[in-house]
Each structure stands twice: as C-alpha cells, then as structure tokens.
Length: 94
Image (cartoon, rainbow, N blue to C red; front, side, top):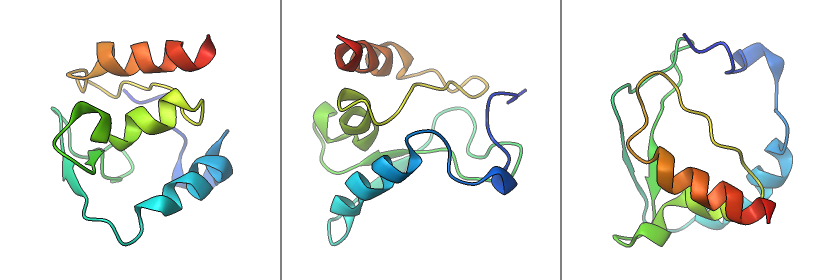
C-alpha cells in the first residue's frame, strides 16, 4: 500500500513550500498530464506526471528532482519512469 504517502490532513510535506514556489512557473504555460498504472492514491489524489513539452526534460518532476526540491516516491506499480527519476534525484544529491 502507500504507507509512505502523507494523508491530506498532514499538510505540506518536506520541501513542499520551496517546490510550490518553484512550480508557480507553470502558471500560464500549456501543460498536460499522463498516468502510469494507478491514477489515484488511496486518498483519492491524482497521480500523474506533468509535462511542459514533448522532450524528456519537459517532465516537471525532473525539474524538481534536479534542483533537490523533490524526492522519488513510487506508489504501487507506478514505476515506468523510476530509473530516469532516480537518476535525476542522484544528480541533485551530487
């Protein structure tokens, strides 16, 4: 199950405020969402990848990870991009 995922009542998690500030750059841009195996977590929240362009670097999660503003969390069988995202997370750690 999704034991590592915070319940909605727990508020903004670690890095949440910084990631939110950085993500304000999405405003006014054309974005679209894609899903992996599961579209929702156990709290009914949408699980999706946010895209800004057709290029791999246009994946918003990669931008957050590379800047150290996010950590990889695999929910259920949603692991199609896990290797790519973990590499970005490691890049930020270095």
